[in-house]
Length: 409
Image (cartoon, rainbow, N blue to C red; front, side):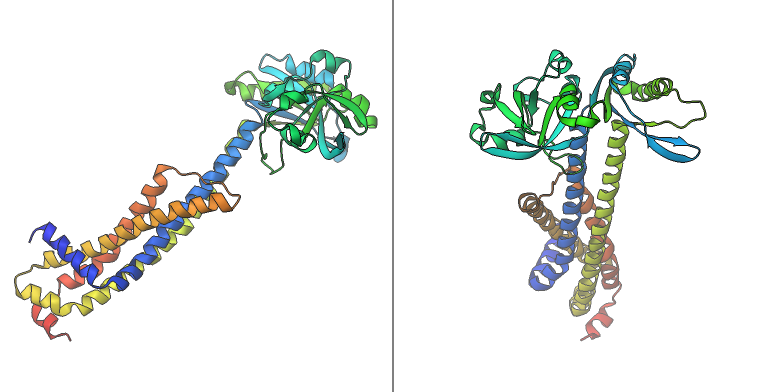
């Protein structure tokens, strides 16, 4: 008997007990769908984190002040200043450097509208280094920073909250006035939306002003503090060199002894991105591995159903063997039945996974990302599970002797 005829017999046998076939398929359907959806959610989370890190800027190093340790006791916080910024910017391995203050909440108002905004003081270089694009206007100039001019660049959220009627016409906002902490400021530019950052906060809910303006007009007794420094390496290849150069420079400028610990911290955003990517990839694989357990459970279900089939169809097996069917043909038929059930369940699970991922993306604030191997991996595993689950029942059926098979009622 040819393989095509055996396959046809297998299809007929599957079709005669549709409910049992559906129950056997159900475990595989759920298993395949679960694996694909879990992998897609994990990949989406990884992509979201990578996009958030990339939105902060490329080749970036962040320099934070640290604590000063004296006789084993951390006594106070070291300070960074504008001279440190200038010195770091002059290093051969550093393309640019910009000071920044930590965001502080101030009431911003325009006309009858107001919003509790996060205000950051910085310089012109900050915008290019942080990948900020403008939908209208420009960054404040070096001259405006030098004279502490009352100018501001507003984020997309600020524009929407204070000027909701100007949505889509942000160019009309340039030159308009806003008040920050009851002080008048002029809008120089409106930033393009970035979305949520790594910690989930809204990156567009920000007003950027010259750091001198923040120090002299808003910060008060924190007038000369630089909260941290952004430094952009010349290229990704010299990130480690730039880190070492900044460390050496600041130790010299802060007059630290050779045995003293650093009173600053230099963070490499590339390392943060790599660590975050590895973490999310590990989580994706863990989710996929956990979901794969359902495939094994589905395979056990197929084995049980096939064993029941062998018992119920023992007379059929005896008659076919008596009429000349070989053990090999019986083995192939039952094995094909298991593979067909698994294949149909896998394809159904694939369609269910696509629908489930779209539903998650639409109704739950959770990103999903598909990659081709997400489909191949569970389908391959399901095929292996189907073959493994069908081997024992098929082997049992093929070893039946005609006389014994016909004797079973």
